[in-house]
Image (cartoon, rainbow, N blue to C red; front, side):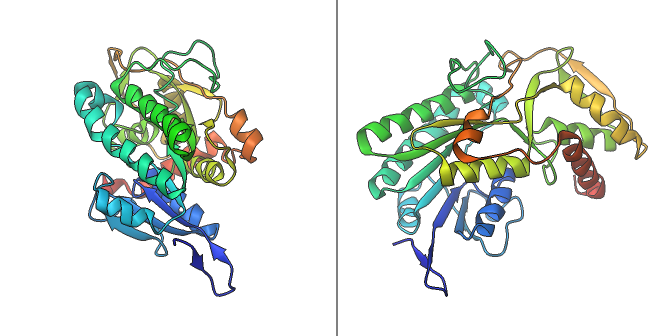
Length: 322
């Protein structure tokens, strides 16, 4: 029912991206359209928060509305679930709301996808589901012991996906991404240390760092993250979980050292405000993406230094917008 005929008589897949109006979703939408797919994006805001290509259809609504989601699923063969109502720091403030806003709607979604025999990519969290690292880089066999409500809920959603695969035949692939950064990432929104650090330097504001060196994270350029999710959709094996990162860890202090000369080039300096560590922040997160590489052929394309330069240039040219 969701198959679309092209002028050449061949069919192309119709893909629904839930939460696709956000940062990663905007890049993913462009890549999927370039691959020949027909893409519909469902988002909570009246219009997408990030620019989408004109070929994409945007629908404003909440995926918890069963009538809406059922009518959309009837017209698609593939679903990428990117939506999430909170970020780690807000989930810590209200763990019950985090659970109630995310779990019931997603479990209902799994049921409806399974009923229609569609393929699902569940985008989880590589940064929070594992908890404190016992070894690095972390592979998918690493124990999952999250220390934030956000991580607990993400892991619970994964468990329900496995349950529905076993009991309802849900065809799903799970992706655990690291930290996306790059052109277009808006600063000062509670996520995205790199864009916020660069923008803070431009605005002559202090960069908040929790702990002496901050946390160690795995940063991946947004284009590479989108291509990893797209390849998981296309070539990922059912019921498998894939880490998606650079396999290199960088502390907040490392980032500041790397961007200092970049900012000096445009006559900007960096001022750091040291704050106490936060209990819900995993100290070290570095992801081993070799399984994704082996199963799908995914390869990271953008060097970190190149990605930083592109991000700085974009933030500088848009400095009056934030």
